Amino acid sequence: MATEFDMHGNNVFVTGALGLIGPEISDALASTGANQFLCNFQPVDQIEQFPSELSNKYGRDFHSAQADVSRQDPVIELIANAVEQMRSIDTFVHCPESIPASTALTKTLPQPRFTNSCSTHGSARSTST
Image (cartoon, rainbow, N blue to C red):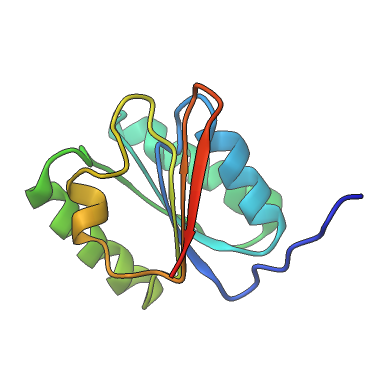
């Protein structure tokens, strides 16, 4: 039996948004009403195109940024940018292709209510806070 989630009003911070599983996760979150700040280590034009596609599909704005989430200085700026644009971060979804969730990103991110770390190798770890 499928469970429907209502994420309307929730601000989700997604890393690896253009990776192997990131686009599907972002699209699924968008379909539940989640607002999203999408980041990836891709050229700026690619990370800006995907949120535009989601905006056209779901009729609301999605934010994005290009960043290397393995280094602390860009992460601090990235999180400040996300909070400025969305006012808060409720959920953090880390979809790395190679960067573990215990990097500078998770050490710097404000404590969200729920975090999820997805691996392209088929494992996932979720933690409620």
